[in-house]
Figure 1 (cartoon, rainbow, N blue to C red):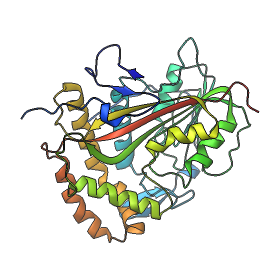
Figure 2: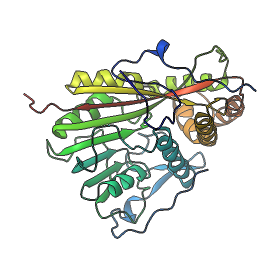
Figure 3: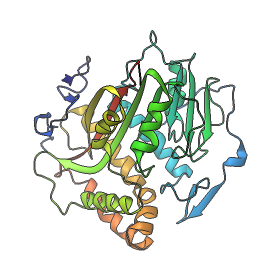
Figure 4: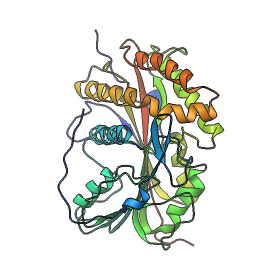
Length: 346
């Protein structure tokens, strides 16, 4: 089953549901030759200053609650990148924040955003569904102080037992978690199933950092590919597997979700795509990822990849350069998977 946006924005670009058939997916055609956002001022404040302390390492700051369990920084440089990344993801999905079948006429009442990061998704959902209760959780208290009255943020470790009652939420969401958990299926998907109301939905949007290519222009010595392979290996050594997107659909089905659907999007790396919209997105992603490489790489590759901090930074010079090579038509896959808890669960 395929999905084509009604406004034609992807110009024939094909989304695949249920089964991802790589060989039949429409290729991105190659060309021949910083977001900023403002938010309204809101009434409620949900995070206290006492939990905003951070650990300092490698010249960056990291979460102090459950220190070391998440290997990426939480300083202003990274949070600004995450805000930009959110805007790229939203533009990639043509303004949508979710694909589970909710709407103004069929709104969710209780929503949980796990790994909320800077909270932009939760805030947007709070604006779209003002009668809903939106909860965002993260290991870092990097969300805005002023939030909509129906949005609350909490510092929580989602890998531990959840405090929420069973059959509580209508909708649970994750996005770009990139190795948050040692076992996403048991720690998140199974618990989401338990804490969703019958008929509730879980949606996982996950980026696969391993670049792929449809036309043979990417070789095995492509530096971005080698970086992603090193990151994947280090994440496995850390028991925080990074590349999980293609497994999520099966995990939902094994836990018991029904009506599970999968959409796979292609996000170009760089401005090589001929179609203007994908070209624009590729350039934004190139800038965003290249700017975040150091923060994403140093902790994981130093602690679990056997490299010194200096070695990591030297290697990243070549990785950044490779991302600007328009002769290589590389892209990354984004897996969007959503499934429903059955109305009657034995």
